[in-house]
Image 1 (cartoon, rainbow, N blue to C red):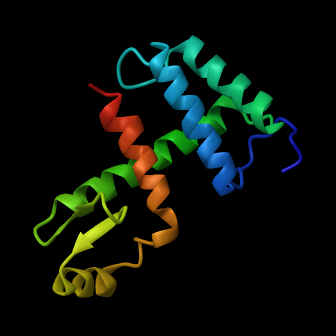
Image 2: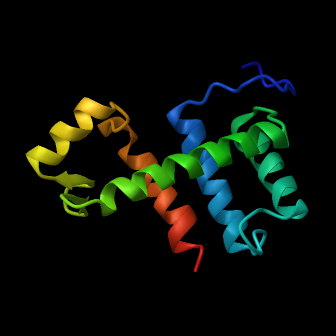
Amino acid sequence: MDGSDTHDKASWSKAMLHTFCDICITAIERGMRPNTHFDKAGWKFVVQSFKDQTGLSLSKSQLKNKWDGIKKDWRVWKKLITETGAGWSTELGTISATDEWWQSKIQVSLLICNSLIFFFVMLYYLFIYHHS
């Protein structure tokens, strides 16, 4: 990514994702998400703040696609930790589950990866903590 305004799919680093989540949290705290979506001023804030903090000029469409994608991932995570045999370990910062639960999930999907745990914590903060 060269920082130019483009409508191609953006390649996201962990640092970019963390910055994006922090900006979204700030926008939510400032009341720019009156319901389930950012309002016009909210998206303007998110786009400009992301450019200011990363030097990358992503479009509202690209940032909204990311928002929608992480919201979908959060829903999957939420479903996983509420299933019988699984939960969230605040002590470890990971999913806590029985061996049987893990075996069934490993056979079905490799969706869960320890390197994404911080990501799911941010999603919790974005979509649960600030949704109330």
